[in-house]
Amino acid sequence: MTKYFRRKVLKFLTYALIVFGAYIIQTTPGLFDFFGISPILVLPACICIAVYEGEFAGGLFGFFFGLFCDSNSETVFGFNSLLFLVFCVFAGLATIYIFRRSTMNIMLLCLGALFLRSVLEFAFNFILFGYENLEPFFYTEIAPQIVFSAIFSLPFCLLFRWLHRKFEPETTKE
Image 1: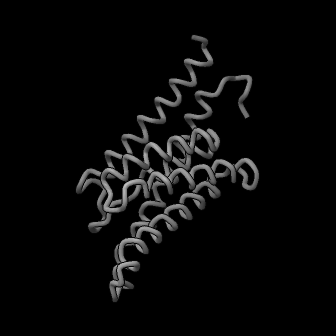
Image 2: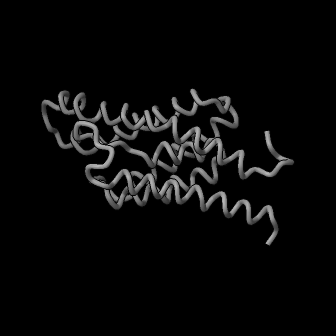
């Protein structure tokens, strides 16, 4: 096993442990609740991995940790894994071909993904079944969850940028 391969394995194991820790924090009742609203932590973490490691690694992380989120979600099984896969692949490709890899762009990508995921979940769980008077629920539950979750994209961005630079070999550093 070469030094480069060991470094890659250690880097992705570290990433997986961080995202798994974020999943544990996200699903623990009462932990990081703010007025009864708990954040979505796994999606910003996976998007940050996609930005720094590329669309393939980000897509794999998004898909597999989306399955974890599906096991604890009230949506159809596969909803989160499919959305996380699409969002992470888009984030990885967007930072390669469209955007610079800056903190503001990563935070905006996370905010957009969180917004689309929450709106799609809201549409498929409530609007599709014809519930009425949903505006107060959206503005008091869903919108604050989006904002509260987006706040965590900054620490994830900084953490994964630091880890990416730490594990990157000296010859390929940017």
